[in-house]
Image (cartoon, rainbow, N blue to C red):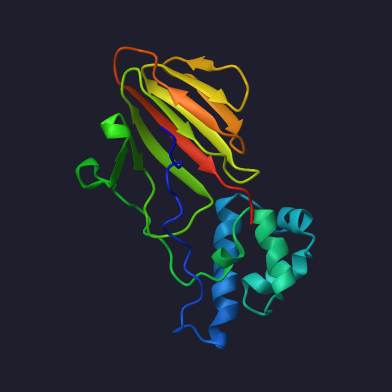
Length: 208
């Protein structure tokens, strides 16, 4: 049965809220930039090299002494590998989020033979999705092509899977094996074993 891939689109980065005034923007952008840069272990000099924005300008932005243009924001966001909206976000996710199994939203399809559970908090849009997959014995699940540039990384936690991408020959994965592939072609996963298989899927969408 053909179906859509796990849906990781139902949440998004908060953009500047109505309560935030233009006067707040330099502080918000500066704080977000400093936090993101340090989280990636980048010095101002290295970020300057990656973005093409001078170290002095980056320093002024981080200290709220300069308001960057939209073009400059795009360059910095691209260098950091995040959406531009992240640089103007006024809210942060909690430092710790517990996703209890008994409270999880599980998508069950194919008459109960295939299920997915998102392992990321669902309040924000992301360029990355992380899912737990449960595939019953002998079941085959087909997926449509994703946008060009979408990458899937699949690892088998328990059991076996075969993965067929486009017209390529199927690849068999055993417990602990992983596969990374471009998902812009239709693909299928199948559990050839006699027991349920558990796998984990990471979806990385192309940069906007």
